[in-house]
Length: 123
Image (cartoon, rainbow, N blue to C red):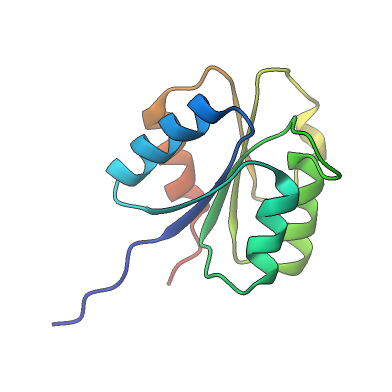
């Protein structure tokens, strides 16, 4: 019997409690979770060749990159990776990469999980 490994979600969030909560409910939904406290660290993980199926990222973070800049890089370099972007500060969602989903904070856990599934490009 062939068993496939669960999809891998990279969660990028600088608020430790929000990161912990997201990691808990996303892993409870059956995903493998990798955590990063900044978009810069998230990009490092991607560049190391780690298999990532989807990214759930906040927009506003410390460092050289914010979530939108990272999403733009990911969309260009790794178009197969699904993108779910969140923020408590409503932004112009017209600047999102094609196929990305935006969720305003506070978000429902179920909506995040649903959005991740919606962005997966797994055959």
